Length: 349
Image (cartoon, rainbow, N blue to C red; front, top):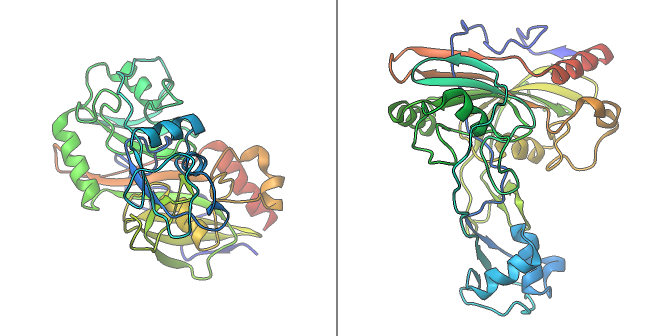
């Protein structure tokens, strides 16, 4: 049975009843491996007895050769001390890994089409397509949003983000579609960043998830940090010995289907992979999520041609314009395959 939440529209209305005016969306994810970051890992289970270099390679998401080099240069410590790469891990060991930051290389302009939702002298808002990386990183040196922005804006981008991330105020995952705000000058960048850190830049997402939460509305408050067993993933981290950060997601069930539901989600914080990890943690992973979804369900297999990664869209953003002080709302609909899947779920309900 297709159960609509109170006042839920027949189609997704990203503006939420507020006049659509403008601008941007929020932070989330980094597609790289956390280069320049430091993490602490606690080997357990089958990892006990494993060679240090093999364990570091898996935990940090690097090659075995790179792991050995990190150990040899002192970037890996076991219980606060250097160790040999052949060291056999023991229960209770704490392995600290410091990944070196990559040398920044200036991004180059590339003539890549952009869906510009709003633009003025201070900022622009982009509807990022699913599959596009926000800025150059190891493994993605070009073809990114930044390369496209450099061609579109020329020198009219804030320099606060450096040569690799000019104008970028926040990021969303490669396979998450939707809104991003870009600053054209440093004053706008600082103002938007302050709104983001002060939770005044409001970010709303739409997601199709497995099953449905029991309550029509709710809040997920679970601390997040790097997964100690797989550095390319985030996880709920409750152990105070491991580094984690507060993460809060508010959700509303907009529609219920057979085996899935449409959720509207608002971020109070903007941690890496926050929505994806939170939804998986409560048993309702985002449809099509290759990292946190586990084995595909029959429903996901049935609609595989419409799933190109997680079915998650950054659909609405509210903020104060850095120059005029005007409260602005900008919105965009989900991509076509998201809408097609939604229509099929409604038809089958």
